[in-house]
Length: 359
Ligand SMILES: Cc1cc2nc3c(=O)[nH]c(=O)nc-3n(C[C@H](O)[C@H](O)[C@H](O)COP(=O)(O)OP(=O)(O)OC[C@H]3O[C@@H](n4cnc5c(N)ncnc54)[C@H](O)[C@@H]3O)c2cc1C
Image (cartoon, rainbow, N blue to C red):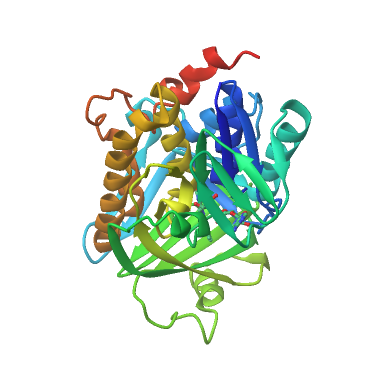
């Protein structure tokens, strides 16, 4: 059993905390309780299974399942459909509301685990060998895991150097209530902009749009999503306020002598096409399948590098979801075998790790 101290209680922090607690480690989590932004997450099939098993909840409501993806890119490829049945999968993507996911996670942590959660934002961090000073506390650790997001203070304190820096990605999100949303769910792609429609329920649908160029957001002045929804003929019953995000794109090495980076502290990509939580789950699968954190570092570096490069590819090709599916087909890396990790949920290391998680 090791002492694991995790700084940052976003999805990377809380899912890592649960996964390491399940392996029998003593886990301390530092960070304010995560608030839902009311987002919708599209999750890969393997991720939904891993979440169900992480949270001991085979009935976790993953929302609508997408069994056909329609990609529309008139300038280059025309239309393309991908069917889950062609890949021997019950579905390609699931969508889950952030509110319900967070509620389930919090319930699980508070009722079923003895994870120590220190609810504070650490303004000053002083990392020493096997202990870290945070505000007026000193926490000992065998492994210190930085999960404090894209602007990670822990990462900066530990002097990680980025491999690549890209311009910031700008993303917008709106959720609309629409008649027959499930039946009209589809993806539409355009030059340097991605529109993604994610079905939430039979009547609601989330719209994402992303631009990769470091230029003023084209939707700053007006709200063309509203126009777009009208143009496509959808009758919006209600429309949420337009939310805009900006995040830097970067990739860091997984580990230095003291600190492991997880989530957006390690790799920040545009929040398009099911990258975020799926990436965290994949990384956890790698970590848990290796005998030690140190031995997992090179595999983590390799798969994160691939994920990053695919993101670059999808940036240019505007074929976001194909990119994600391709991630599922990337064969295992280095000396490490994890077949069909992303899309074959039954076979993920996390799922197999279930045997180790009886407690
Ligand atoms: C619009 C949008 C849509 C998205 N859609 C999807 C999707 O469909 N599918 C998907 O899988 N992902 C999606 N994502 C991405 C996903 O939300 C992120 O990948 C994920 O939230 C990253 O988790 P994280 O824990 O690494 O970082 P964060 O969520 O940023 O969490 C970092 C945490 O660290 C805490 N923290 C920061 N500094 C400190 C400190 N000094 N001390 C203590 N705590 C600190 C913060 O309070 C925060 O709670 C989307 C993101 C956006 C913005």
